[in-house]
Amino acid sequence: MADTGPTSSPVPRKPQIGDSIPAKVVAERSSTNTESSSGGGGSTSGGAGSSGKSRRRSRGSGGGAASSQPADGGGDSTNASSGGPGSDGGASNSAPTKGGGGGDQSSAGRTQGGSPDGQPKKRRRRRGGKGKGGGGGSPINPVEAVLTDDAGPIELDEATMEQRRGRHRNGQAVGRYQMNIHVTPEATHVAVMEGRQLIEHYVSRQADDDTQIHGNVYIGRVENVLPGMEAAFVDIATPKNAVVYRSDVIVPEGKSKKSARIEEILKARQLILCQVTKNPIAHKGARLTQEVSLPGRFVVLVPNSSTYGISKRLPDDERKRLRKILDKAKPSQHGVIVRTAAQNITAEEIQRDVARLLRQWDQIEALAAKQTRPALLYREPDVATRIVREEFNADYRSVVIDDRSLFDELSEYVASVSPALADRIQYYDPAAEGLSLFERHHVYEQLHKALDRKVWLPSGGSLIIEGTEALTVIDVNTGRNVGKSSLEETVFRNNLEAAVEVARQLRLRDIGGIIVIDFVDMDVKKHRDEVLKTFKAALARDKTRTHVAPISDLGLVEMTRKRIGEGLLESFADRCESCEGRGMTLPEHLLG
Image (tube, rainbow, N blue to C red; front, side):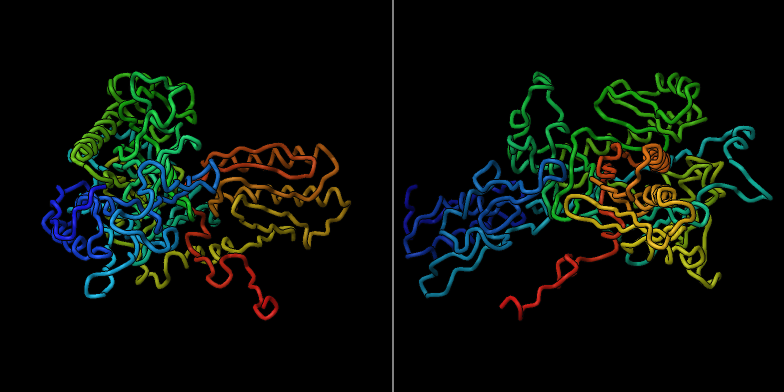
């Protein structure tokens, strides 16, 4: 590289994507750094090239390598190599750095040498900051979910309204479930009750755009493509790079969908439109897909796709009716999936839902066309609105909310999409009632039990639930259950209780991934089959996808449950700083 000499003035570089300061300031700082380079006459890389390179550093540590983890599946030890596509491959050209691989530094590191007056050079800071996509400029306003129509709710005849109102007794709505929504300044809690028993609990912290991002749509920039992992790391303007696997990448026309490799489809620094399918968990980043889907109340829109489907949970005659409606409502260039909530819904309501999602997609496309750096394009609604949209139906006797503004918002939404159920949205005034909403329905008491590692069974047996890095282990014990007739019968009855309770705990604690259950050993094959049948029947009520393997020779049941985000325990608790989650500390006086 040519030496510009100690007196040469670098040419101001042109503004690059991701700059957050004017080009004039960049030139002045580049000139200052050149004049104070090591040895008074050290070479530069043309002024603009060096500053631009350090400014475009990948998120990561001192050596300039982007270090991230796949969201799931392909192993836990995959790091982007420092010489790979999209990374710096080391420090900037102006001077070597100290400690090239250590520390979590966002700058090029502290340089050797100094200025002519003997003072050390200032460390150059990365513009944009952690989790900002490495870019500057004014932030964009992402598209928000469109929940209601300007035209207002569709007017239905009295017979249709009566059919959709669900069951009532003595003027009160009757249903199997109740949803309690508790809002605090720190977080929003959604508790789903079956009778008086807590079966699901969701927690969402306010303004959490880093961890609760499932369903959000982004413009992402490919940082590293890893052919050996068939995956690519993508910067989506969050603290951790996300990952997209080959199976979730859209193959462009002209390439084989089966044989095209990911390095042929994606290139470093390429901008792609993507959606989060799994929240970041622990040290793993979010998982992405390029096949975007926008959920509405009755349908899911899949843009630029030929997808066509109707929920399998609907009866056959209803599926035939909806298929005729969908043939007319489906846009020619987009795919549509009809949801279970569309049962007994009119053609006009489905057409309105499709039109609402189409307007939403047009806004996302228009915003994406203007972007030149990673950015959030579409944000899913808050957890309460999302759960009501996905779950609320005539099986819920009520949705009770203790926040007035959220109550008004959800009342308007339900009145727009399901006017027959609007009276089931209720406001709870803690000041007038004298108790908080969760105290009234004994939610706190059940939450404390759900966060404990030990669960007691009705007959005296117990479950011990332990989570590890790779899987979750559940141990079934007879405990105080001594039975009456025989050991085999006692163990069988204990395992039947445990099978039902394990299914409930998986749903309540939102445990995902690989799960191993150690039932108490049973000698009779008929008993083993009956326990497994009971367990599968209890899991069938869980809407999260599960797969259960037969009982092994060691009496273990192996299963998987789809993981979307962190579990209930992780949403409440912080890892212990003393033992780092191991549950024990090592005595220093014994180790020296």
